Length: 236
Image 1 (cartoon, rainbow, N blue to C red):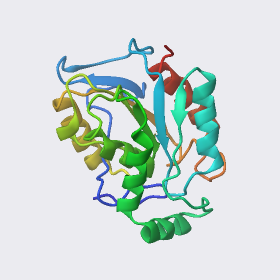
Image 2: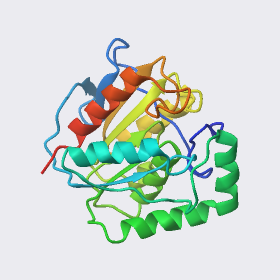
Image 3: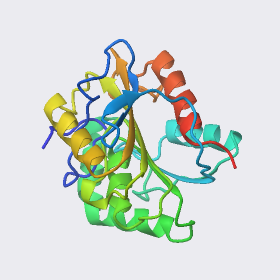
Image 4: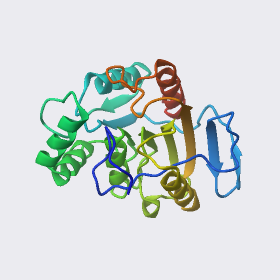
């Protein structure tokens, strides 16, 4: 298991991901299909996704998460942003992990389930780092989800993947908390299971590069992430 990172998912969820070996380094936007056996590039999707649940990182429900939800809502999506802690967000990684330890992983996952209960079965599962792990953990219980949007980390077990499940991941390159060998193993397993997986890598960005309040922030990478995420989540 990878070393825990600033916004890492609950500790039982493994983290791995990497672009396929046949992809060109010059273009970090790739889709790898195990069925086609090649990399292709797509900028738009045809499946409509009206509902999204967005899970926060180990920091808690920070303003950056609420801003991200507002961005998606402005594009026409209905976005739920559950507070998995039930307590105010924290300012440091150490405080975040201490808070997670006090609350417990089971309580975090139970709150995620409760937030999903009233939402449609095809609600897109999305999250930031630890939240990506939470989204992946919910995949097994939400087989009809329209997609999995992973920000700053991998998520989801290949055993829970249905053929054609759309998955988009955004990851720093390199990412100190996602070792390349684990990334590669995860990606190959997901695609072998039939996931329609798109990976976006951001050279030189920090781990949580979409959050403007942390040192990892990379505004160019963040803007590109949201542009691509919105393309992944077209309006009804």
